[in-house]
Length: 512
Image (cartoon, rainbow, N blue to C red; front, side):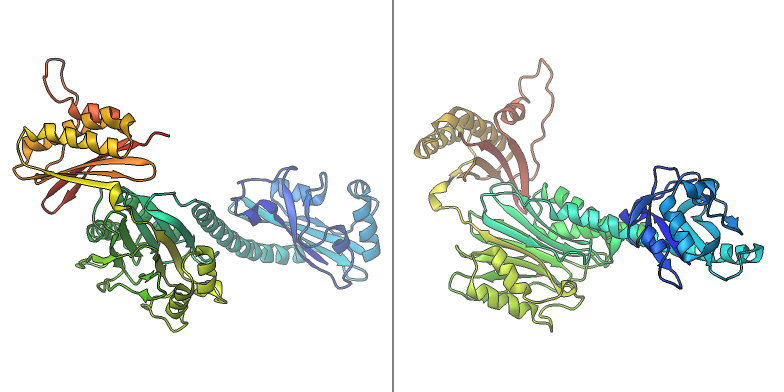
């Protein structure tokens, strides 16, 4: 008869402590074998968790990490008297000799292996003990490999679980959004919805190469870099180019364990003011638009390799998203470009043509009966275009006298929108931003006010490529306090650069 018990914490992916096991540690019955099929099976079934019985050969073996050989098992011994159930089962099975061996690797206890001789078999001797010790060493090494695999999977599930539990942010540019990642397939898959300036929103799907912890780490690094670059308001092609530079640098620093190489990513920016979307990709993710009339369109993207390939250029594709459409970002579980042989693209088009409002139902229709190892990453959104009367624009000549006109125009617009409570602060913000633009720009200045559900956005665009920088003025300085004033009056502010100039923007929360 033979039993194998393993530390219960190993099944949770935890690392076992170095050194002997204490009384408080729990063992889980992992295996049992008996010629009669009785005995210890009744004492502790496979899968049951129990404490280590104190003052027993098992406890002593785990305490000093040395095997125990009991040639002749006395059923009336003191340690068995404290466990009458086990003593009765030993008598019924005819167990008369035992060897208890700790399963250890490098001084770390993983479990306990116990062998019993029953009925008329000869008792164990020193030769049996030496052979059992050799087998226990091999068993411990194999158990340690399994432990490491469980640990890797637990870490991967932890990363995946933390990602899947994240709620997508509520933004005015989207009526609804819903994401799907196949459970238990790859810890390197992700999707994101990132609010940007001027009521715009970034949509991201990505897949890091590999599995387990390495893929999870690559995914986390890529998401962090993308979030940081998105805060700079970079266009999609430039964002992917900078992300690619980071990946190439990591690959060169870690050639044996490249981080991020092979990562695919689709980054799209939707602008609710213009109703247009700009997107770029690395690898083979795809994007589809389900139109209100049931038709489906797929924008064209330039072919690009996954991240980490040298000397590749990314291109931004621009396309319109009609009101009432559904935007779907997809990355299939394959290295081959879409369309795929399993019909993922066809499923997507068919589902979009039937319905585009119920996003969870749409996901279910796309997946159908696909097994989890063939399901794609999906990010579905229903974009919302801002009404024309929620946007006001004005162009000013490069004349300091135009600052007064800008203040008056902003004040009238806030009255039209019934936002008089924000008039004083907004007029002051407009005055500071326009004055700063007049000082450095040599061309016309464009102003834009945007009112969405929760925010009033003010933009001032000029032809100067250098952005404003907040500084701490000295007490004797007459200027340098404009940006400090703007910062105090607004919740957010920033600068967005273009090919021929920049846009300085601010955000104020609307009154409740």
